Image 1: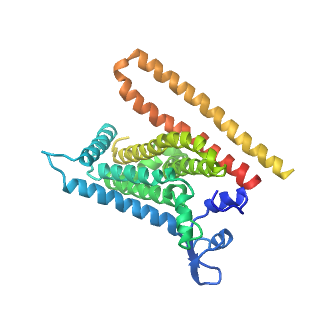
Image 2: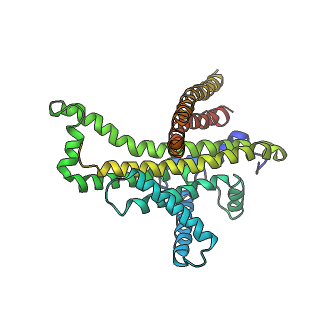
Length: 274
Length: 77
């Protein structure tokens, strides 16, 4: 526990508060100094830590993979090149297995979502107090390290996917085909409102479940790490080590599920006949 | 009074989530073993699919554990 004078529930709440930059009720812009101030900003608030960490990790992914692709050689492949190739092969197998349409965008999309989410989730394995204490020494009051424990980040990704689903549905089936799929499908054309309701719920559930599943898992994992950090420091390793090892499974599994569902949804958007 | 209700809520949340997931993952594992015993050559494919479904099933109780921990330690404690 970093600061001895906090109670445990204050410590937990401090760890779950994002660094928020936004518009105060009186009209000026600035960083929030308490969680109440952050809540008062309402919609005009930006979680600087979420954006910062996700941008840095995305840039890291692009930099590493672009460097591996530029330095790729057939005669003497480096260890990192083999690693990148095995990931790309793995994604390629998955896309080939469950995507039947014709679209060169899907495999790169799947690779990006997978690696980016893995990197963002992996921030969970950094001990919970290291980065917040380091940034506190530089004058930053609140810091939430894992971007995927912020619903804004997961919903940002899943709404992006949702827009792609809508775009490719309209592009592949035509506007009429897509509307027809939404309105005529389970019960025929005389039950149009019921069809629209069922298919609409079905469509809207996709981004919501995608985002909430990732957010919920990472939030729960982070929560348990924070609770373990409340124990005396000499006993922490006995709980945080097993949980961290189990959490590696969740980190990879959730990224893999997000990627698989992205591929499946894109496949559904490309299916013509119903 | 209010605090004891919060503790009850947190523990019910955790317990019911675990109950559902236990039944679900039990059925999932049993069917996976049946399928593997019937057609051992399909094991790699079945294993991948089982992990996907396990992640889907596992998500709900994990979320319940997280939220109930939040209720027990941050709201009530």
